Image 1 (tube, rainbow, N blue to C red):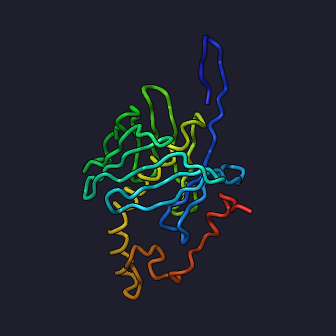
Image 2: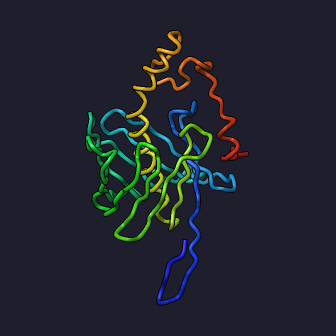
Image 3: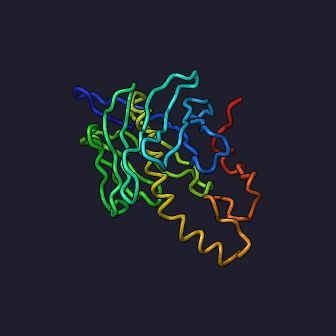
Amino acid sequence: MVVRYLGKVVISVMRQLYIRDRSTDLNSATVIHDASGHSCYLLAGKWGIRYDALSLYTMSGELLAEAKQLTLGLTPKFALYLNRRQVGTIGKSLGLFHELIYIHGLNWIVVGSLVSGRFKVFCGSRLIFAVEPVPNTGGFCSCLSVTNQADEPLAILTATIINRWARHHDRQPLRERLRQLNPMSSTDQGDLSMGFVPKTVLNDQSLSRHVHQPE
């Protein structure tokens, strides 16, 4: 990324982080890696009930940021916390997949194709971060490119929430198509294997080509 500062051209390298869809994890926490395969953050928690929370930690266990669910239903809302202080709220509207999302408090605007997993987040004209799906992962792994490292905790939570909304939006039609193709497939309890692989085993080979697992 090239920016101008006081008339000079400054090269700013956006760090890339890799986020796996939490519904594909059999563990209670998800490790966020960088492009070199180093473990950077730990994402834990759940949602679906009011006051549920997603929490982001350093690898040493220090709490950095949280997203706490405020409302349920078709238009859920989350409060965003940084260093235990509320800094913003993000909510889903019924038409969000073709409209802008405004994150109150942070003054961030989300634009792009949310259903396809490709979107960017701006504060004014400044790019905060961009998200795109990692090729050959079926959309279950996303690459998050962040301009400033200080924005990474809230960027990770925001991207996780939006990707979850997009995944939930597209999941029911997929279930119906797979049920027609394979009546014996298991589509209960949000099982993403859809009956084509055992419930307790998820093929992670495609992800491992892009994201190294922690040692």
